[in-house]
Image 1: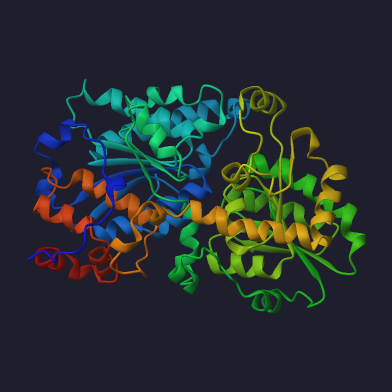
Image 2: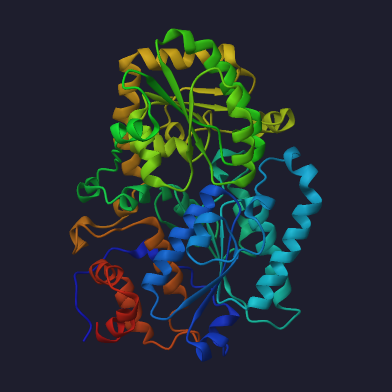
Length: 492
């Protein structure tokens, strides 16, 4: 018999009621006993999100899951054999895309044809909306004429519609080829649904760093990661008296080549303010970025330690050893909050892209903590203000002013609590308070809820949906060896 639990307030997991043709057709999945997922990520942050989703989906699925698509290092560790290097589509901006347009179109066509041949039950794209939305639109247009079953289209990380003039109205245009959005900010899902686009708030992906490191702070829902700074200094031979600044120049080659020279000249200006200064550059797992940084770092005016991407533990050890950080805008601003590491956010783009942002943007900030809290907690030096002479004094002020650093640390608790998906759930209904209620688990559960009961599944649909609504049962499932799960589903 199914284990009865208290009513779980997981209504936000429910997906749209749209009926797709795959739901009423005999599928290969019903014969093979598998769930086929075509998955696409186009940049490093998306690669991490997608890899965690893959892991959670496998753990929750009553049958094997087979993936194919486009991804990077982290997804390959989950068994994905990418169609082509993810870096081929890792381009951000409007005018920045023009030199890569031919390759972009070739990769787009290749991805569409591969998805059609794979005949997936589910298609999931992660961020990289320039490529993702074109891919989903082209793919949806091909189903009808070729008489193919229509899989459900999910997109993970909603576009920043709230940041642009007229952005909300453009959500209507996604309805034709996106069936469900996974939102990482608490206010996004309700707005998406008001425009007819089913959406789920899953929480910010960076929160999963806490669980990756098995940090005990999540027991009290305090989103904080404490690394081992002494271990980092020992590993890389950094003197105990040396001040450390973490530098995070970005994950795309175009932004790294633009930002890293600015950071080098900035550090040249401030190095004499310290008796000893060491710079730690966090290198994204992007082969082009790795080659560029390795070729240029020997010219830097201060001692440099290169920390390769891909290790959550080493990343937070470096953060713990650092006094402040200098970041290119992106997910890293959230990681700084998790590490309680004060930072400065900087950003430059193509001059025409900067003009477009100024003209169309309706929010005054670029870093997520400032946007969510609607306050300039993190100093930002953007566009024409992002020059070494203007950036240097901002860094020095943060380094020397304890009150400014403490302001960021204090704000982190409030900011991160707003990104927690469990805030949307009745706390009294959670049977297991230590349950790893992560964004990837919420997203994987939503995907499974949308597919159970179809011809792709040989399980009792009502029973399995009830299972997905019980965090206590999901928690038991996540801790089981894969070989036990099918038996577990049949007995719960």
